[in-house]
Length: 118
Image (tube, rainbow, N blue to C red; front, side, top):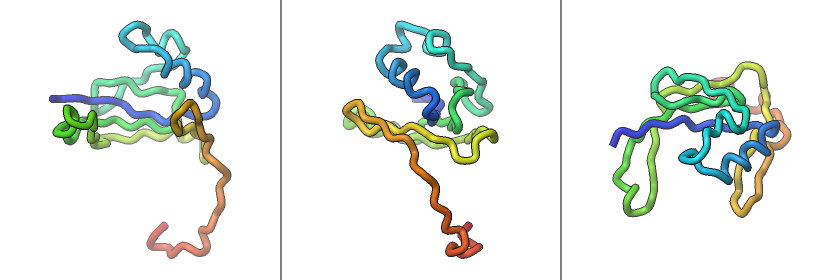
């Protein structure tokens, strides 16, 4: 199997689109067109990145041995893209059962972390 995909982390501004995208199948609808998202070509894989998402990760299947037994795909990130425009974006994380979390406030402990670990 030679699978490739883009994994993107959406921000709070596209939460409604995230929900709508999850409620339909890409086999039936062009999700980029329907939800007003911008496809950007990847540099390592043949799968689109999503311009409206802060980070995008180009991934290829690393280990497919657990797919048939556990539906578990183990991916390797081959290229990471991060938008320079947002220093601390409010990202959306799905917790299950229709519940989402928006990333929380930042707390700096820079002075307490040893320089070699920054």
